[in-house]
Amino acid sequence: MQHPLVLCGHGWLGNYLAETREPATVISTTRTPEKCQQLAQQGYQAIPFTLGDDPAVLTRHCSQATVLLNIPPGRRNPSLDTYLDNMLALIDALIDVKVGHIIFISTTSVYGEETTHIVTENTPVDPQTVSAKTHIAIEKRLRRYPNYRYSIVRLAGLVGPDRHPVNVLSGKHFSAGNKVVNLVHVADVVTALTQLIRRGGEGKTYHLCSLAHPKRGDYYPRTAHARGLALPRFDDTTALPVGKRIDARWSWEMLDTRPRFATPDDMM
Image (tube, rainbow, N blue to C red; front, top):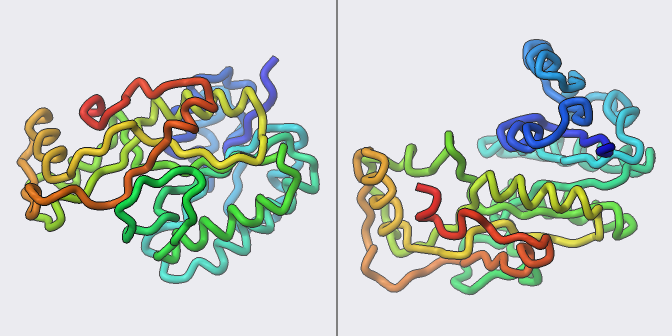
């Protein structure tokens, strides 16, 4: 029998992961009664929970469970102090009830945008945005606890059947076409998370990213053409590539898998 999986934030990614499991083993949080009803109709145990609520509303379901913490801070919020305080309080409460494994969905934006180097799981972070700094603070709180209880997963830009950056970029004009892209397909993320859930927390930090990093001035027009969209235009595409390259080879190896969408071209 599968151990319970608690999706603290049953959003876009959580839905893809939930579809791979027996519904009776999934406990989901959502902020609205309508979404609770929808999830219940699909066979999931749905809990109305908003970050900042009494953590006991959630933690009573979490003893020995795997908890996927995937509540994004919101890109347009200039101050994330309340969000951070609530996330840290939730983590502390989860540890208090002896949660089996916390998986925190973080982001490769914690490395900043200035580096042009290959970035591994051991590269020092350089968060430059409020959101990135907040993610680092949450990661640090997890590291206070015994190593076997948590995993940190830093995701590159997420792509899926119903989600791709080119849909937003189509027909627009941008600079820095020589900047490289770091993308990962949701199917590969789900495979990696499934492996991580099976093996349990070991206090490690993982990268999830494809293995190739084309220049965006090459990649996005090519993708737009393949999808029948208006081509985006980029300056500086012929210049030497710049920007960080997320190296996830160690993580894929540790999780005993290889991305099916190994290059961004596979995601078109």
